[in-house]
Image: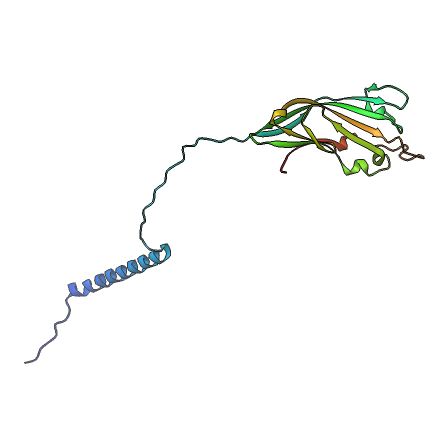
Length: 198
């Protein structure tokens, strides 16, 4: 008696691709899951908590400097100080003193703020023979503390209006014709206010 192998039916042949497809899909999902676990460091979760501060806001202070309209006078060796209406018409000679009365408005706001007020001269001012023979001096009477040449240390107590005096003296000891017919640009003098760090 011989055993004959039954030929697959149409239904069993149709089921094979479905099983193969399901198996392939499951393998793909396992592979993707393993890849995600390896990238994300695992799927473990740890306890955590946070509590916000109840301190409230903190605000920044301020530092600012503005200049009002200044006025100039000129005093020669033999005379008294006279008002200057137009600086471009002035011809200075050794011994002359030009004086600027300069209103300032300083803003210094901060619990610990300190700043240095200076009169600074640019390099082009002193590059020529005339500028090299001019002495610059800043004075702010009763305002801050003088801490160096043309430098005043201010605090928040000095915030507000003040008046500075800037003098430009043509050195009396200038000899020969040093600086004759030359000019300097007074716009190369600047008032600066810088927060102190030492």
